[in-house]
Image 1 (cartoon, rainbow, N blue to C red):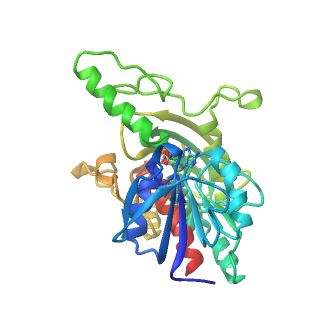
Image 2: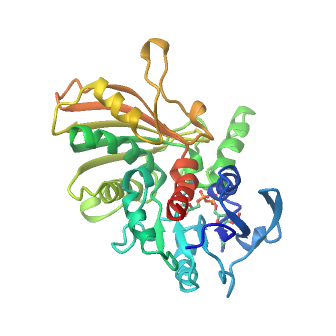
Length: 345
Ligand SMILES: NC(=O)c1ccc[n+]([C@@H]2O[C@H](COP(=O)([O-])OP(=O)(O)OC[C@H]3O[C@@H](n4cnc5c(N)ncnc54)[C@H](OP(=O)(O)O)[C@@H]3O)[C@@H](O)[C@H]2O)c1
């Protein structure tokens, strides 16, 4: 398997995740020698600097994946549906951040710290040519990072999570919408929603994704993703999970209030110890110093930060905590790069 001088591609290079991806490729010294960047025709010809060189943004077209070793797809469900098969047919190892393939039984859904053993098996075959790995929804990534060490310690039985999700989770246009609405409202105007369903400046919106029908009536597609993806990554197909997903007027980082019930009676000190020992997780939890995870402290960082860890007053087997992570980093770009790094290791 080739491990240096790689030719790599980023699809969606000018988006919120794509920009983060390009910064991280440089910061983490990812071993590439050639970088192909793809976006919509709107961005054709834009120049991007990475690893000391300037690269031009192109568009997806026939033959564009020829000779590419790894492609990171950070565009949209539709683009992944159309172009991931094309890339795979050209022998490219694809790491897809969209929602298109996550729940496909043939496609591993990966958070390397949690189920990286799947990657070890794959790289042991000696070739990842044409392979497809999916990265989870940003909300799921930070949740499973906190759940895994607690599950290993106490045996997870039930999870109730409420999310407080930054606008960057809805892409670059939603970030622009929040900042321009704040300016409009502060100068006495009225915020008008274009990307999100309602004005987001000075507001919280208890809807992310679309409302579902049938047995899931009343739930949203985002909430369903969190439930299904959490079960798949933790390999706990019957885990009881409930989710309420809320968009909040923050630019960076998703926050989550989590309540878990375990087979064994959990203790706070043991939970802190297990979380601290887990790679990629930090614990910020000193109530007397007013220290707990927050957006501003974690924006542009790599960690999944857990705090406010406490017993559940309503159940001896319950534990409550608060999790914050940068959705564009560990929730998307960093996780995808870590998948590729693990395959190369
Ligand atoms: N945002 C998050 O926190 C997050 C977390 C996990 C996963 N994801 C997933 O990551 C993907 C990107 O999300 P995002 O938030 O970065 O969205 P975004 O900011 O809206 O960026 C979308 C990107 O796709 C490009 N694009 C649009 N049409 C295209 C086309 N026809 N061909 C090639 N590229 C095209 C856009 O190019 P232009 O700039 O030219 O329009 C832009 O670079 C989505 O699948 C999303 O579900 C996002």
